[in-house]
Length: 76
Image (cartoon, rainbow, N blue to C red; front, side, top):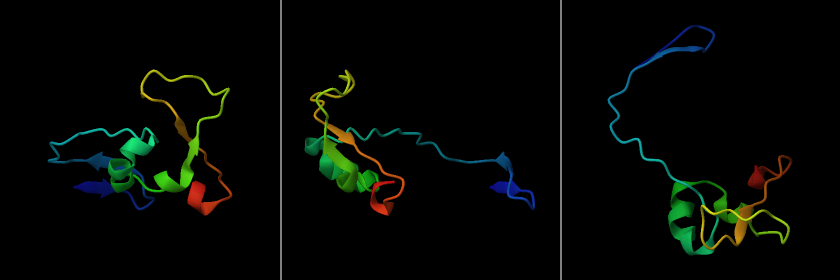
């Protein structure tokens, strides 16, 4: 149940939600089937990691990144 003022500000949020799972988009091609089902625009924003991009220890291998462009609706 959400209660809102006439201006759209959320004042109270009550939920019976019990699943608070978090998902990470790694952008790696081997995770593409799962990530494409969970997230929007993953395939259209996936690019090879630039050579000078910092190494991330969260994802192995770390070969892809999301390349975004605010003026392109498919890469926002």
